[in-house]
Length: 115
Image (cartoon, rainbow, N blue to C red; front, side, top):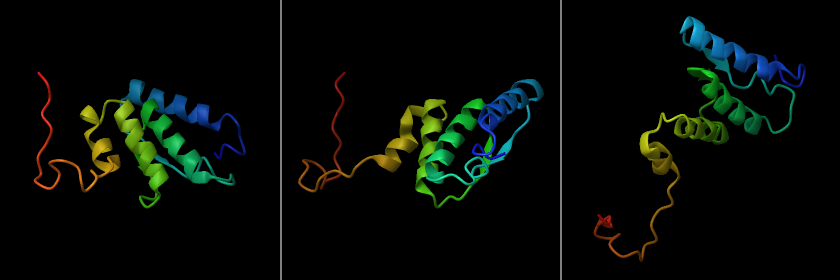
């Protein structure tokens, strides 16, 4: 049910997802854009819905993988739910490249950690 048509739809979905995970121990799939139908800025709403649904127990989503904002919501939920160990996928995706003049970057060297 779109959140614009029924204000409690989000809470109800999250409660249901939680029950399905904890009581029945089943996998769940949700359509990411269903919740935002008819609203402006749908991608932001979908991104937040996906992150919150993952926290409630959703295991997969029907979504468009070309919408970067929604993918960022999934990546963030993976970090916050400890599904992305040491934030490796997050860092790989969002780390800014080293400036060209950065010492060691041309030789592929890495900085050492202090003990």
